[in-house]
Image 1 (cartoon, rainbow, N blue to C red):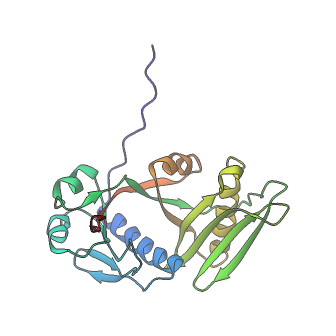
Image 2: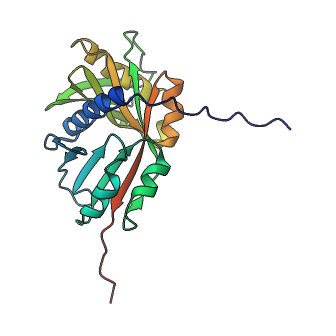
Image 3: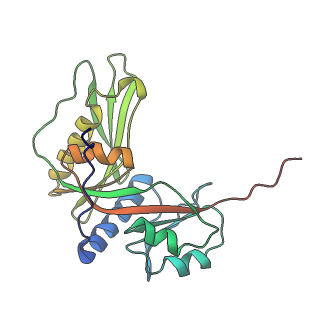
Length: 228
């Protein structure tokens, strides 16, 4: 029996390029989430998100400072996202941290070619503060899909690309991201960035995106008091 095709290994990391794109993504993510701007710190970037379940996020371009930082932090709902091989991050983390599924920082050259929204859907792009919102609507005006995008120093950062279950596999996410990408290109921005899940990675690679580096997320869980 023939073996199933294996996913090719990730390309080697180029530290200067990786650090550059990590910084652009962090700032764009903050704009789409309407959180305070990231703070540059010796180990990478700190974002004070300030919501339950996500108090603060530290984004590290590599695992060199992961061991020290994971021991230093004590506030519940703190998060780390570390770029580089997962095994290096896992080995460095203090045991208190809960490691989540691997994600992937990905990039692409934004396409100028329009991708129409399939009938009977319609698409709408609007400005929301420092970011843009794209929505696909049904013929009845109900939301079928959505995506966010913000531009920062020559890059367009995409976030919260979501299609409702009953409207999947219709090409809505691709059309919305294309509309947002062309909005960015109109401003002289030609590079796209996003962070994908393992499942999303395959979809984005099919659309021409390439992996910059894997990201290992970890969080310091909140210990709820036992129920009486």
